[in-house]
View (cartoon, rainbow, N blue to C red):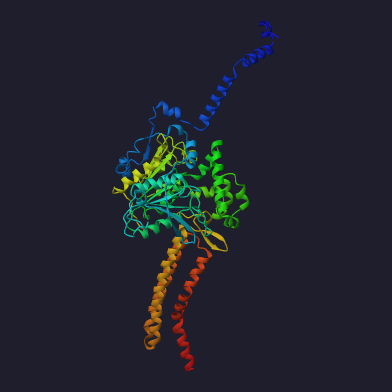
Length: 563
């Protein structure tokens, strides 16, 4: 039925009929083009492409933004000489998306061929850490070190690398980093997390985002074995969070000359909120949770005993895994407690080592919202470099995406730092760590029957206090024993001994009281610590009472014999 103009104005049905007739006359190829255009537009925005933005700037890239303290000597004498950090970063054009860069990093990373030499380090709690070495001679073709060993007097810098979450030395980005740093003439060692790198967990301790004890042990071990070799350290992703937290915890008392933190999450609580916000972030959350589940399955016997295994298997996110696994093993009250306790942002102000931090503003995993801008600006030892694009640990550059920009920037920074006078020198000081609930403490120490107790720097301070107390009491006990011997051999001259013994006893109890007051002021002593004091003081108390009442016993015996 044809619709006249009068019918069209009176009946809307005729208008719709004409519209459908017009649509039916459009070629299907035009529909296909429209759908393709709509899909590409959606994909361009969903994956956050910036190809057109780069094209409008003639593919010059975006400048690197540097945040630092105006009075920072690290910036004035080191970073200011780094040409790469004062240049621009342009992502590979056909990878101009943070999501494509991050995704292809693990599948298309195109890493160089790297052959590590493995060393197994046994931690003090019985855990095993895999140290994978790459010597500069292996990369540069220098045959002088055919036995792949480093002498104790070697002065070649050693670069320590801390991997990211569930990553080990075989990750493509770590191979890029290890190869790049070794080409600079440095020896490289990747300190794998516990249970990764094909190594079994040999204790009830597992690593987490704030676990700093392993890297602390490894650093001090390497410093003892190679005291003349400068130590440098690089942390990536969660490894960067661990690094910054460690630097803040130990302050000046670190044998590290310089450090670099790449794509740190900074604040885990903010990161947790961010990664569950949008659909694309939820995909990363799910992928990382699958990786954590795979890690747990490799160590199922320990997790079955220490954590909620059924919950681990049902975990759909990182937060779920931390709720059913990390909080159980680490004895954290809640997931938020764990995130607050292990976030490195609260330790930035205490960093005393020259530290370069590199982050991307479009990082799809570690959000820019968590970057502690003001804290980094206030610390004269920190320089924060941020790029507009780059993804998470990717920063591909060049037409073939053969290299990672942050690897070049890191190597240049460490080279300039090594040739400067700003390498950190260890200063042994007593660190003062704020007291917190023991359930919030890490690292974790196996106590008995599979139970895991939290142990932090607070307990280490107590141990040092008791060692000092024990040494003091041992000296006093030896002196008192000597007095006992003298008194027994010279009974005729005992009249001068009691004042000496009373003075010595007074000194002993005064020392004990001072030490106990210091410990009580710092924290509430636990039952076993008080028991230790009782056991230690019992023999000493007996000696003191012996001399206090000796004259009374002697006089009583004389009166009894005379009577």
